[in-house]
Length: 234
Picture 1: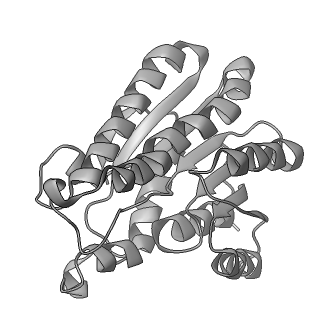
Picture 2: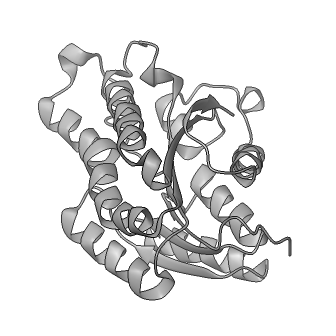
C-alpha cells in the first residue's frame, strides 16, 4: 500500500456508499486508519470488508449523524479506538423528500430533518472531535458541499439552504481555529453518479455524471499536499 505520512487516522461519515465509501477506501489504501460511519449497517459492513480486502485498517461504526445520542456514541468509539483524529470528513447528508418539492410545498418538519443531519449533526460531531485536534495543534476537517449551496434551483431549497449553512459553519470554524492548527475545507464535487443523485434526478444520464471513485482520488490528492481551508471545486 501507499503511505500518506500526513494523515494517520481519519473518520468519514456517510461511508457506506457513493463518495464516502470511495473516500474511505482511497484513504485506507494510503495507510490511513479509517473509522467509517453510516446508518445502513449492512452496507457499512460491506464497505468495511472491501477496505479490509484491499489491506486497509477500518473501524465501522453504525449510527445516524442527525441523532444526538448516536453522535455521542460515535465520538466515544472514535476516541477509544483511534485517539485524536488527524482528519474528519463530513460526507453524510440528507436530501429531503423526493420528488423534490417546491418550498411552498415543503413541510417545516422535513426542512428540520435535513438541517438535523447536514448542519446540526455536523456541528455536534465537530464539537466532540475537533477540540482534541485544537489542543494538539493540528488537524484537518473537510465537508462535502454542492453547487446548490451557492445557486438556487427549484426543488433544492432544503438541501441547498442546509449546504449553504454548512459551508458558513466551516468558514467560521476556520476563522476561530485556524490559528490553533486546525483547518476547515469545503469541497464541491459537482454531480456524481450516486444513489442520492438518482433519488433527486432519476432521469439524469449516468454517463454525464462523475465517478465517485475519481472524485475521491482528487480529494485525497488535494489533502495530501498539506492542510487546506476555503471552498474548492474538485
